[in-house]
Image (cartoon, rainbow, N blue to C red; front, side):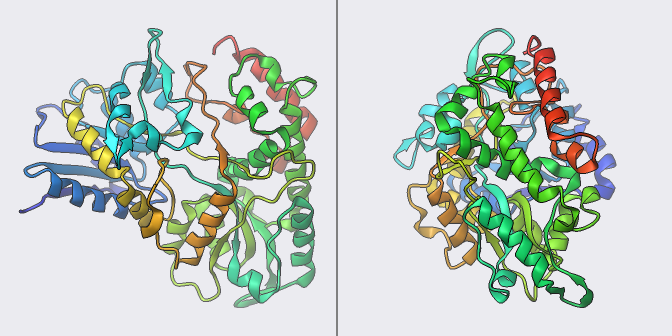
Length: 464
């Protein structure tokens, strides 16, 4: 059979004109033999989904997929959801605004999909436990439905240059004390950056434009200190007092302890590359790839992004289990990235059954392994047959080892609130309250930063 795969690839230089053309849906009609998918392709790319499409089309003769694969996909999705003649059928992307779309009825309920079979179990059984407990969302009419499935279940934290560590006999730290010692050792060893004898390798680079990347280690340290039961209770958001570090019955003081340890590393500017405050994620990753620093705080999407920078001479990506912080109650616990991601069907879609069948294909064991092999990450669904994952890739082998050592992964999901403001962030109240950038810029101190978070919580809690 002749399979048609329609892929729209838009470069940033053509984005404005292309979006204008793509969003002028007037005159378009729904084609019952076509499934229109819109994908956010940053980080994990789109090679993985092309394999899903090929398999799905083969199993559904006469049906085709029209794939729009974009980096800045959310601009397009926002405009299409606002259109009265939206013909899209499936969205796979990252955007906190999914809660607004769900509350406003922009997404179709997916409750019945949860009972559909995949690999001998239900879709519900496949969902990663980090997200399973918070699938139902209350809309503005007070109705509870599943409007979105999670997309990936990422792990973030500290990534390191394995080649550099091995050449300089640096041990991967298992505790924060060891991490502090390692940072001092890297500076003391004064290893020259390859090709530039005037520059020494520094411990870290970071992306000042994405300081939320620090969350992945800091929130893991918080979870280690507070314990899983207390963290899950925090995510009920029962009171603004949850954000009071002086609340003796709360755990926000332990988040402050985690940030204080992070600040013990980053208050010393000699511990990171000068200029990091202005770096994008790609700037920081390139510096890491080029051997200017030994470690970087980021997420698992960095592997595929780093592949684009060329063939490394002295670089191999490694991922360490977040070092255990002093005073930890639990050590097999970690923060799961993905609460801002969604797989959703717009309520205007007339091809819901086709979208269901595609989702089921995508989360089957075969294509869960395919995502790991092609995108070098993990979808937020359980793979009961991981034998086809390529563990000859040393990074994937190490990444799997870390996942297996942190079986209790917790996301900042909540079904307790209606989010009327897309900027509301669970743990920090709002993204502007996150303390890292203010500390790095010298505009605040830890005490004042956490006092401001508490005051913000008191102000906005009535809006929740």
